[in-house]
Image (cartoon, rainbow over all chains, first blue to last red; front, side, top):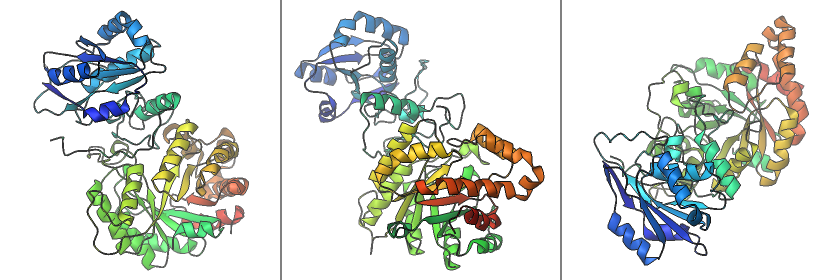
Length: 202
Length: 293
């Protein structure tokens, strides 16, 4: 079971570049997902965003096919707003980067993924979502700092990165090295100090 | 005495480092520190360094202070959550400790308790932010503190020889914006890399202390090259260590190398931070050869 909630609407709107078009992707997902379809639908209609509804955004083959099918729409927009779990946002962002479609765009996460008890349904994916309830992907260029960083740091790289790899595992990329390089390239480095909210994780 | 006041007076600041024992008896450490009394401005006290469990640095900092030394209390975020960290920071204030070093901390898996739970509730940046909040009389939850707020001088670390210089400089700037007063660097063995770093770091305005780890053996240098992030010992120094084994064993090669590096790089920075790794008795010779005492 996977549950997402829509992020506060003011927060979503504040991050969108108002002068640019927004393209919305909604993932109605795997059998296990509960996602606030009506609320998101209402929000999309209210702001007149172009929107597509697809499934299994965590599956990169699907995502590649969709990004090809909607290539024109994606090319003509600067804001890509994704309503899915954290895995879906990361997966879609990575495909955009791989297919050279990421430059000049911002990918926004429209949902927080909430923690649910029990054993989660298994959808093997390259990316991980910790169901932290406060999706940070909007601050980290679509790479999850909670799961891509061994320490789950929120404010940048620690001193342990060597040759782009994590001090804990020489095979593992330093998540923050990737985040920093991406943010640096897009000029989106910010100075906000982030503190994690553990109250919402049982 | 806050180190920032020494920097403001234009002093070239010197610090060394003490690692607490894996036990509760501190006599040996206190005795070893006597050889550097009056030679350095302050002594860093490490916090479960390399994720190896040791006596609390808050306790050792207090004991050093009682003996008339000036401690720099190192605080990592690996082992304690934001409540315990705030508690210990207030504890430092209660003990009259004025200098803190803000660190994220090595991961638990690298140390001698690899099964332990990594905390990392805060990191070096949010820890700095926390101290600044306490200095304003508030805790992290926005509650007012009882009595006078504490006041500290905050240090942090930067790695001039790290692979990604842009990332280091950006983080340095973030740390300054969060409230860091001064920096101690990770060990540097290459003058040109340090010069390149300082060219850009200078404009950020915070004093930088050159970090030096005494090279004990060629093996140690190679180990650091393989395993320690941000540290690179060039081949010529490894050769120098290999050349005369007796000289290296006695520590003379390590002293010479450290002294020479300090002499070369001191015009570029505002102080030196020595990490003797137990060779405290060699510190006076290094500082003397470095031309800083």
